[in-house]
Image (cartoon, rainbow, N blue to C red; front, top):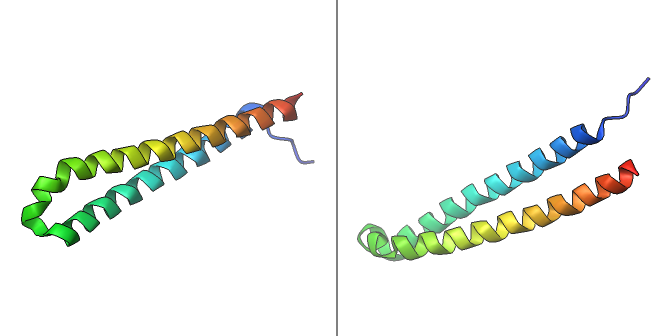
Length: 84
């Protein structure tokens, strides 16, 4: 006999997946941003571009987090409908 998972268990599973995906995306963005800056300007010029690179990286990461939060809200709304 299969027991149906509780709403809180489903919610926790969905949120964990979304956050893991958002954190993985942030790490990839950070690595790509730093690697592209070093390749473009060399090690000496890297110090000059570092601040602007981190600003760009932070903005991209924040956009990804906002996107994941919207997806979480959508999933939670579906769970509310599922519970009703």
